[in-house]
Amino acid sequence: MRDYLLTLCVTAAVTYLLTGPVRKFAIAAGAMPEIRARDVHREPTPRLGGIAMFFGLCAGLLVADHLQNLNSVFELSNEPRALLSGAALIWLIGVLDDKFEIDALIKLGGQMIAAGVMVMQGLTILWLPIPGVGTVALTQWQGTLLTVALVVITINAVNFVDGLDGLAAGMVCIAAAAFFLYAYRIWFGYTIEAAAPATLFAVILMGMCLGFLPHNMHPARIFMGDSGSMLIGLVLAASAISITGQVDPDALKIFEGSTRQATHAALPVFIPLLLPLTIIAIPMADLILAIVRRTWNGQSPFAADRGHLHHRLLEIGHSHSRAVLIMYFWSALIAFGTLAYSVHSASMWIVLVIVALSAIGLVLLLLPRFTPRAPRWAESFVPPRYRRRKPAVEPLPPLAYDGEGEAGGEAGEQRVPVPAGVNGATALGARSTLPDRRKAGTRG
Image (cartoon, rainbow, N blue to C red; front, side, top):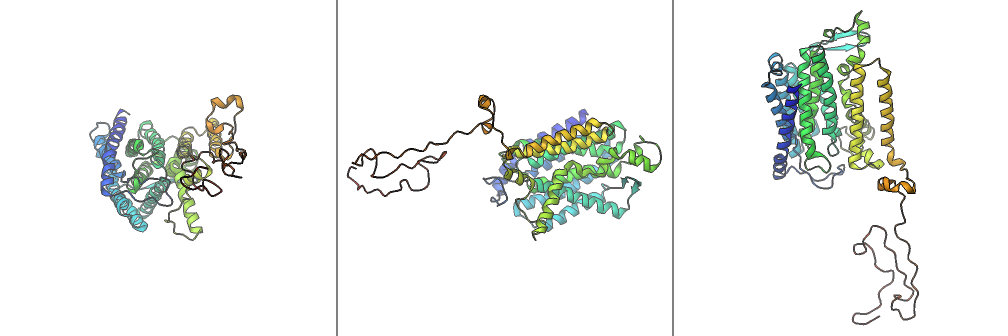
């Protein structure tokens, strides 16, 4: 565990320290696109944050290669080199897109090529445990197609959710933390060396996200861009593929009986193996809803819009920071809930806690719809949004006319109150409802 913590810290430190210089480079290179209709930020912000994240990935792999307890991962498996090859290719495509805005179909083709490069070097799915059937070995073509599909779906799911400051990096970090705990349990708890690469990939992914988040939290000073979102999506997919494709479920040997009985009994343990995308269920739901919505409206599935889940949270009335925290909450609930259920599936307390937390999440989602007002005596102890609103400005009665047009203003003129929150010196509109009939140089 100390070696994993050291790898995590080195990856996070390199990513954090390089993000500042990368921001200056992005500004000098002109990687600051104009604000689009679907964007929620108000000022042009540099991209190319994926450059720092990629070098953090390289630093993490380099450090792990020189650690005694993690060196065996590179000696016994070719998966780290496969990950680095695919990550370099997808990162290069992302950098070009951040600078020149390449076509969506070209990016899709690049994602498939990156996945194919990893498959050629051995990072592929070999078998799947299917309930009621048992462990099914996949042919080479089946494993390749399933691996490519999983990589492409995961990359685009993470890319779609990257719409608010700190959202994608935080959600992927939560998913990577849950996946690391599961993979470490398989590797250390059951002494299955084939799970070691997935454990290493997950901890490096956590370091990449943690190192970038301080620069990306609201208000963000730099965006990760496609070079970062596609990169962390590929690393997350590689972790799931590694533990699914290389860990033989029969090697667990924790159940007895026929194959079908063992598969049914081991279903909670196989949940992260069968459905690795549950740890990014929120981005996946956003991806599916976006495709359905755009296709239903006669648009291309790759057409950008403001219908993502984070946009809906802003429309409901949540602030930027609160919308991000709500997405964090649901990601953590799904990821760690799945992890807890896979470890203690027989415990009813796990289900009850998940249901209770889901109810809390629903209340947080609908909070702007019903804003409770605190009683008078408790207003000093609650935030201002829960206090009773006072009248902004009392309407002024018309001033009496004294017959000379002096202090009372012009004959019949009434003073127009200025709306609350608007400075009279900057308010728009006419200053008086009647024309000023006084001439320059004369007194009223």
